[in-house]
Image 1 (cartoon, rainbow, N blue to C red):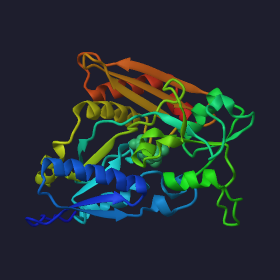
Image 2: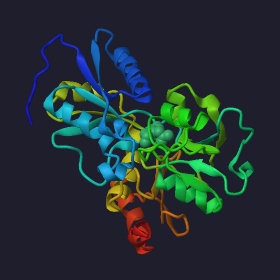
Image 3: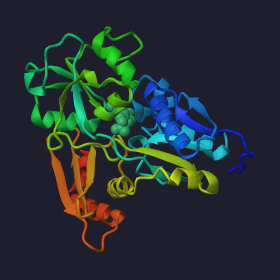
Image 4: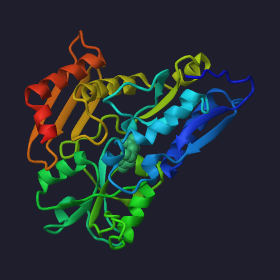
Length: 329
Ligand SMILES: NCc1[nH]cc(CCC(=O)O)c1CC(=O)O
């Protein structure tokens, strides 16, 4: 890894994806940084990642880590000083790239998944979808949990940024000759409320899945701020934006994910909350892709538990119930 010292007075370079959601997140971070240091100059380095341009199945390109990989490499090379990632998009099955650290996690936003319908559709809940209706989502976590309550639904893959996905929902085109298979008309789509909020699109929400019906992805709603470990100035700056409760919850969730060797598109869900007395409580859920088999665990931290230990205990309980076998099925 090449080391680079930021010359005094030069702007802080912020690496981010170039999607509208990513840019909105970055603007939010810039505002927070400028509140800490009104004299700070920043410059956004926006990158279109392989995950953004590839139209097909992400697993064939190496999984979801693609959204963050190019930006992490820029950070390692010194072409950016900090990076803003959705924690959900940061793989949990491998360590962070060499020399990088998550210096801060911002206070968690809403973690709920929501149902969105094509413009003009009267549907306001999954129960109102007709028998055999089609719902667009590429996340096996969402697919399995949808099918668990409505096994008759047809789940269709959909790719792209949130804006592109909404456009496909509102004006579908027939499948093209290039195998662009996610153009089939869908009756509804599942998205994260946090992403829609960042885009100012919460008016599109028709229904909020209760957590018992749709447990969120590990790290949902959390923005992670990364820098190079050696860059103490950046680390100290970012550290002031860290929300310790969010950080502890996310550490517990990611420790569980790591134990299960899962990533953002594994059939794994996890959600940790902090009770008023400060104790962490972590729910974990794994399922087979068709939603027919589940393992679930819900444990609260004992006095000796750190967040990672709680995550390991939930992982052990899921493993005892055959998690590996269920995930692989
Ligand atoms: N995989 C894309 C992605 N990464 C983070 C969010 C939403 C915001 C969040 O949960 O942090 C989304 C969009 C979605 O899942 O609808």
